[in-house]
Amino acid sequence: MRQKPTYRLLKRPGPAALNGIITIYRAQGWWRRGDTPAMLRRLISGSYLFAVAELDGRVIGMARAISDGVSDAYIQDVAVLKEFRGAGAGSGLVRALLKGLKSGGIKWVGLIAQDDSHPFYGPLGFSELKRARPMLLKGSYV
Ligand SMILES: CC(C)(COP(=O)(O)OP(=O)(O)OC[C@H]1O[C@@H](n2cnc3c(N)ncnc32)[C@H](O)[C@@H]1OP(=O)(O)O)[C@@H](O)C(=O)NCCC(=O)NCCS
Image 1: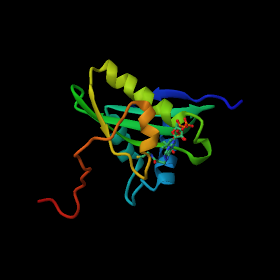
Image 2: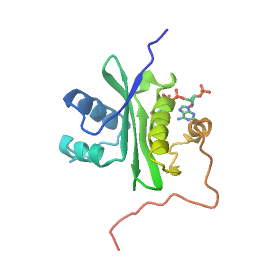
Image 3: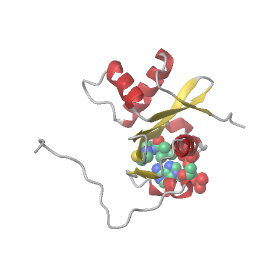
């Protein structure tokens, strides 16, 4: 049987974990030209929670929550390396975040399920927000 990943919340990842996280951002196409490891460090420390899934010390998945730390949070950047998908790591990552959010007293937890991934989030307790649309700033600031 395949070994089960362990889940860890990070604030200041060491070099190996940071590289592992960069690998996942790159694999997802979420690493833009000009992004740097220093920016990623700031993104991680500035997130309310940043979780990684590890197998034999290798980062195979990640997820983060951004939050005011009081009432609301958004989950984003949920991703598992392709070869490790379908074995529960993605669910484990979201559960690790939810546990941390719950212990912080944060009750409103939202996310955008991209690329038809909404069936993944249902069993984790999420349902579609009715009469709402995700919006994104396009072009220049007003
Ligand atoms: C979404 C993702 C994180 C799931 O990771 P994973 O480790 O494969 O997830 P799990 O093994 O915990 O899957 C749990 C269940 O969700 C289902 N599931 C997983 N990914 C799914 C997806 N993209 N769409 C629909 N269902 C999905 C699985 O089939 C599984 O169902 P089962 O319990 O009936 O077998 C992974 O597919 C991924 O990295 N996708 C690319 C990035 C992405 O789409 N992120 C989320 C949207 S922002």
